[in-house]
Image (tube, rainbow, N blue to C red):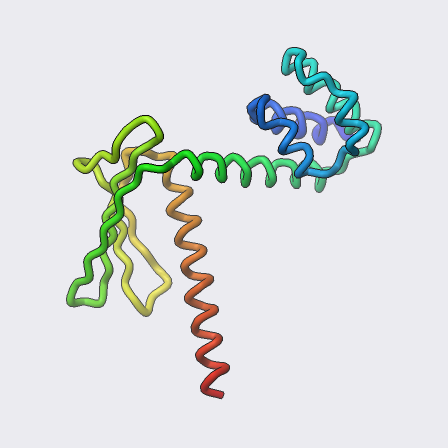
Length: 167
């Protein structure tokens, strides 16, 4: 295994909280169940990481495997973040110019939504663009992007289904 791949895997594993490490490694499915049982997760995180790097070297991990681990880590971390983000207030308003104004007041699991510092998103129909104001909670910006991508996929699916129905 290349030195850079080992460093990439090491940095990715160090970003993962220790209580979620087994879940992510099982989802990665690169190391077998027997190999994961040999790891003592009650040690310090650095020694756990060194042991995992050694197992990956034995199995000759490639850059694709390391990238897959990083993708799984990011997806699960965003899922856990979205799961705990339970206090959000969203309101919609349509204007004359076929624009939809979306007002989002963000909160976290510990705080109520801050109604005085909302984020505004303006969407003009018939265009693939949305405009967003600055957000006080910068960590919520990726969530807006995820929702927007999902909405665009649903819109394109609806349009293709309508075209198929009319043809």
